[in-house]
Amino acid sequence: MPTRSARTSWTGGLQDGSGTVELTSSGAGSFDVSFPKRAADEAGGTTSPEELIAAAHTSCYAMALSGEIASAGGTPQSLDVSADVTLRPDPAGGFRISGVALTVRGTVEGLDEAGFVAAAEAAKAGCPVSKALTGTTITLDASLA
Image (cartoon, rainbow, N blue to C red; front, side, top):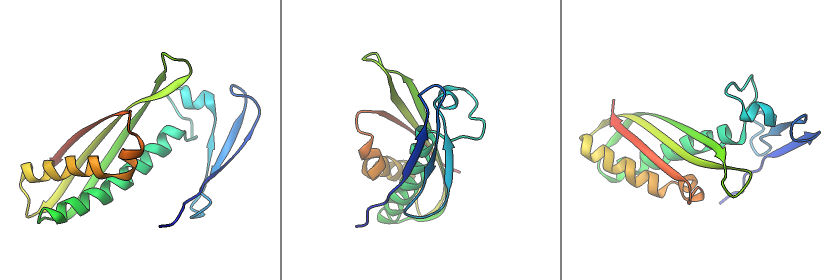
């Protein structure tokens, strides 16, 4: 299996510095980052590690769920997956990702609501990004559209 890479170029200190994240494997883009905007309610056009984790989690989860649906005898027509990744102060010092809230709505042939929810839970457990986030609470809200 391949290894994927990204790179960040940073200048300055934590509070006054900024950087650019580059998706080097795909060349799909570069994105600005800064700590003050990371910790603010409004991102102001910059991304954050938490947003990038949310993007990674939703795409990985959608792939895992489409596979679980097929294994359960269904056919996915569409999946709409969102993730909210929360950054909070860590009681041990610094910050930590305190939770991920996954939400999925699906249009699926061949599975009822219970079958879809079972596939969704299996995908949450089997998704490689979910596994990488072991130790973080991941919640799931899954239903057919």
